[in-house]
Length: 162
Image (tube, rainbow, N blue to C red):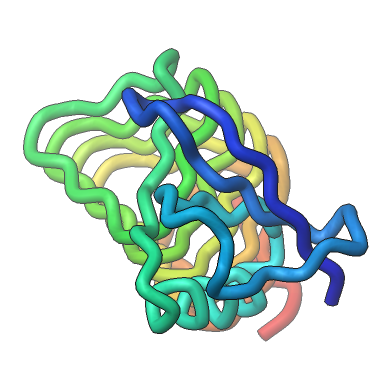
């Protein structure tokens, strides 16, 4: 896997290091000790890289786009990314290393498990549980709980692969 870093400003930090897989540069513990965001879509690879980053003494942050709307009593896990226009309503929980794509709407009381990838424009009705390690396709409407390790999509959302 190839990784690179770029220093930037986001979420009130003056300098952040973005790691992704689009360059020949490698992560190493001698990088400047700025907080790190990992921009790799594969959640299992991202979690492994995050563990390496943390064990090297870096701060790992959760990134929430400023156009996202986050309700009261919402918990968003470590290393998660919430992209532009996402809406997460009250009393919902987003697990560690989850990726919430643009324009996702998550109704109140819902749970998105760790390492899950929630596709662009997806809607989740109230009090739904999306277990860990799930990939849900763009534009889906989730009306019932989704089991761990599944690939699901559609309206209504259906599991197509476990």
